[in-house]
Amino acid sequence: MFQMVLALVLFAAMYALLLIFSEKRWMIALAAAAVFIVLGILPARSALGAINWNVLMMLTGTMATVELFIQSKMPSRMAEGLLRIVPDVRWAIVALSLFSGIISAFVDNVATVLMVAPVGLAVAKQIKTNPVPVIISIAVSSNLQGAATLVGDTTSILLAGHVGMSFNDFLWFHGRPGIFFAVELGALLTVPVLLWLFRDERGSIRSGELTEVRDYVPTALLLGTIALLIAASQFPNKPELTNGIICMALAVIGVAYEALRRGRQVAVDVAKAIDYKTLLLLTGLFLVIEGLTHAGVIDAIAGLFVKVGGSSRLLMYVMIVGVSVLLSAFIDNIPYVATMLPVVSGISNLLGIEPYLFAFGLLIGATLGGNITPIGASANIAGIGILQKEGYKVATKDFTRIGIPFTLIAAISGAALIWIVWA
Image (cartoon, rainbow, N blue to C red):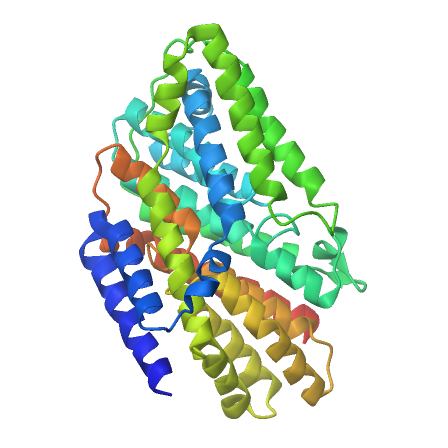
């Protein structure tokens, strides 16, 4: 019990410092992880295994490929093309957010942000508006759509493995609409939310000449990354680092090609472009969350559901969705979902129902909850890292201004549809 309380206190202190000293987040996370290890909350022998190397490899590889993508001038070309078909600034932001959501339904959320954010930055520069809310909108949209398909997010893969779902089961399952439709309903209802948030951005957009793209190889590499990640998802027993290897391999190919074509300075520029602070921040968070798991904090929280919910199916469902939204705003949703899936299955057995209602509610809440705070999801951290690298400061209030209303409308509508279809 003492270790559990200590772990909670340390985590609370770390989170408070992350909010206060946003530019030092990577240092704070690594320091907190070191304290967890020194105090024995996280055994030293478990430290390496706690780090999600696949995510870090995906991040590093995609960052490198995206840098080549930026150098090719393709983001500017896409931005200029987008500006020609939207009526004003606010619709440009909505279009980018929806575009991000569509991609993230098939590709890891972090990779999606890294791909779409350069386009968002280019659009913001073109229309001379603050890029902070633009990138935040892209990040939260990618988090939402990650639950739509089997390949959209790690939590979706955990759900599929636990209840035995295939890619198509996310669309239509046991003769009923799958979780895909709940996510898409939430995404559709976020459009008026975004229009309201950006109601003052009504400036007209002037489109000039389209930028000439230097090289289409980086674009092909990004599309190849998407295709290979989707293809890899069809193999259930693939090695754990498969996605990371795909992203790293294509990045190496791209850097090698461009270095041969334009000189070795390309490799130096790409190495400088990688956001090492974001990688270190995620490393620290992986260790801290694993420490919380070792201390029994995750298990203790899961046990509360059984004690409080009792035999009421509706009360249990509301608890699962609501608490999942709340906790995922502060902790990584992957260990949480992995821990809670057996719990919701046990609850379903006690109530004599299939596990899908509670399992789908769990995924809706845990996926969307990360949109409430800047560190609630890896995609948020990646988006903020991009902004900081460009010299922009992101205050917590800047993020919650968009994240909270976005999360509420998407979570409530999605959870309501799941209840109607599966209760």
